[in-house]
Image (cartoon, rainbow, N blue to C red; front, side, top):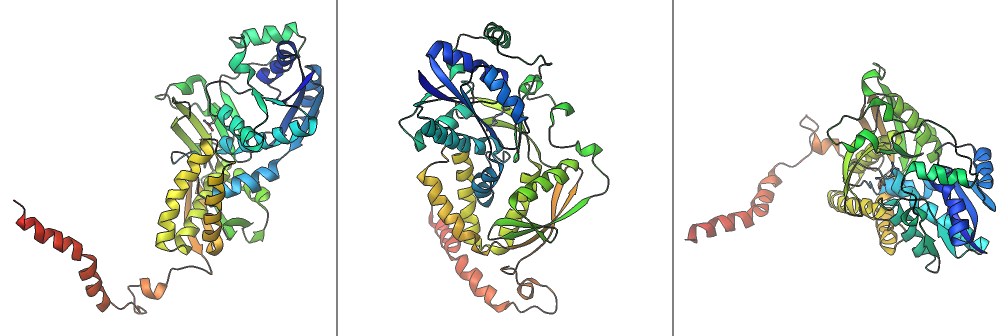
Length: 399
Ligand code: ARG
């Protein structure tokens, strides 16, 4: 029997994939479940995969690798999709693809399967990730192929194959969570006019019920990487966890977005990324202090492109390598401290300092210590405005 490596979450869809792959494709199924911070019971997951008919089960905690190798480059790039989405789901897919490829190669499997629906972005990201790492592998997406048309039919199929299905009240929402954030869609959220009900939020308290007293946090960066919190040095994991907690408590990091999916439709998605929101703000503010104008402005273009590249599933591409080389160079001076204030859904920057700051108080001041030579301004304005003068003079000749 041929072997297939299946990305397995333990939910109904991927549980049904196991007997379906065995029955319809005559394949032996190896499941892979990756812990990216979504909180699951590894023992229960293993039992369920085996009870559903898997031959072997891989469960790996990849939170550290996710934060350091995927989230961090995106943060240093200030990458967001359509201004609001900090890409928690999109960033996890290339890592999932990488692990699937690794395990397929180790197991000698020539086929990989996933439980993505045929309407979303994730199928594209996972498959592009697989192809860019091993173009020989073949992909099966059972949900695009099978005859099961509803949840009821899936449950019936599971029952027929003796698959354990947890009898739980079905949530009307589709939620994807990891350490970098949550993506929530479906149910009443499909009506873009409807205010999201409070119950959908996974990581944040409602801004109204958040504490009246603000929380102050100091973040240290070294070469564009967060390295400390409130004066204590710590790693990415500790910083992100702490900021999720503090940001979440203060209702920071909610977004409501109508976004343009890869497959052409617009969808409404709610995002929560408390740590991401705080870190993005702090990182941008530190760049404002330390990068020269032209680099800063040019990097904005890269940010947009970088966000698109992640969203479009092009993580494992030479374009990203090239962007990373540029970004690495720019981050040489992005070291320093940012002070933020979290209060009732808002995250504000309230102080910044850096040994590489380009801000010069003697030049900026309107006070007595001013060293700026005002007489130079006249000549500058004359030359800067010269092209406009020439145009204005020509206008007089135009009929
Ligand atoms: N729209 C987001 C993206 O394309 C999130 C997709 C997953 N969302 C979900 N609720 N399952 O990255």
